[in-house]
Image (cartoon, rainbow, N blue to C red):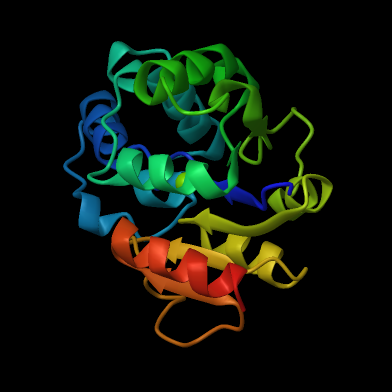
Length: 204
Ligand SMILES: [Mg+2]
């Protein structure tokens, strides 16, 4: 029997991305922003700079060794290992096109031994001015994903409104949306909670 497909975001779901990014942007901009103060996905608002500048900071950060060596969240590798026994995992990331090669390296470096992960990465390029943008729901539909694991509320809403339930990790930038309940959007704090929900959703 063909395995059900699960879509999984990379940054701030698997990889601890925001904290090192904030350290980097603080150095570049001479600021002292704390992780808990990252109230929005729109980094120009968080950094209080132009949109172009915020895009450049992210792009420059993605060219550093720090980015290549981003740490995984506790339990995320074990959780993926567990999931990959039963399900087919695809990764969907909004990372820009320039980071594609590095991303493949990163996945190989961190997740070696898990089934063919590096071939299953989709780049939606949502934060790029000039690159074509693809909604994550479109990738999920094309790949027949049963659910998505995310940290971005807009992506979660986009997917859930198209019939793809979203498990969303609580982060400072999505808390304001998660104060109320949303249909087919399931907030979690840990990978343990996420795994329990995956089973519930798939077997519903
Ligand atoms: Mg993310």
